[in-house]
Length: 407
Image 1 (cartoon, helix red, strand yellow):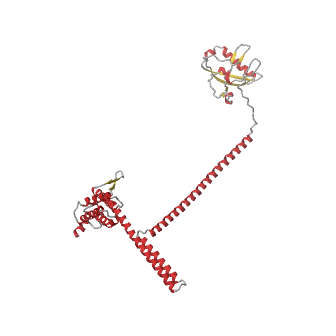
Image 2 (cartoon, one colour):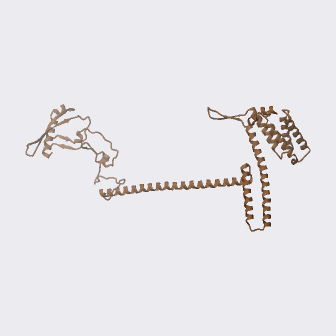
Image 3 (tube, rainbow, N blue to C red):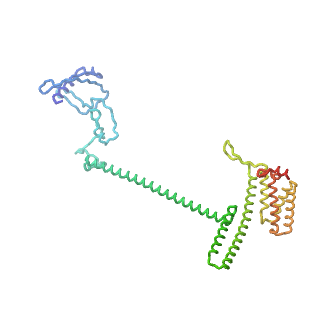
């Protein structure tokens, strides 16, 4: 719209404000025809505007405007003629705040948003001001190059991280395999040591028939090897007979050593068997509850009796006791077996009296070893008899009633 067109439009608006129609149309809508003419005064274009007028209930700010010198009408600034919504700007120094637009109207700046220049009659405090200088211009090519470098940098770091992670995984796997191999070798070495110690123990302290069979086989192998060596040697007949005689004597000594080991093994096996039997008859009754899965142990009269007899038997086995301690054990044993009257109990009581008499006379303990061993064996028979120890009936291969009826 050129200057002539603007003047024509403003004159029409002045005439509207001067008429009474202005007061009548407050708060209503009306239509106005706008005619646009060219420089020659010919009509170029017409269009209709729908305008809504709202009466302001506040003092409109004076922000400048246009005053018609002919009529004296004052036209306010367009910002004051429209309804404004107050907007609080949080980012006071941001570019969007300084150049904010809402619809097609620029926002009026608040006092602290304004820019004031220093002049002769105005002093501005510059102590808290900061001076910013522009840097080198950053072109789009430079931006693309920087993005490319950043992308390559990120890719390089990611690939390095992947490589380090895979390397660490392979290193850990290798270390784990080495540790497993070392553990296997250590286990194998430990098992070999245990097996070697066990083989040595089987030969130095044989306990089972298999152990003694190994000793006899190795002895036979040694004898055969020595005889073959002597016969194949270049010795004379007399020397060979003398060497064979030495092999025979050594074989005899080894056989005697094996027999002594067999006696010791039999005694140890017997003691272990007796201890196992005594522990079995004295253990409490056990059963598993179905409700909560707990193991219940209960001592009965028979197990309590068996435990008392086991304690007496272990007391009779003890050696190197004082005179009073040994006599207490003998008296306890005597009163235990005297509850029954039979040949076995009478013999046990007789042995107890004999040992007590010999102890009172001051006889040395080695001279009492045979008597104590006999007393110990008889009391073991007393424990194994179900008539005196009902719990022993569970461990008899032949029921006691059958044995008693046959006897």
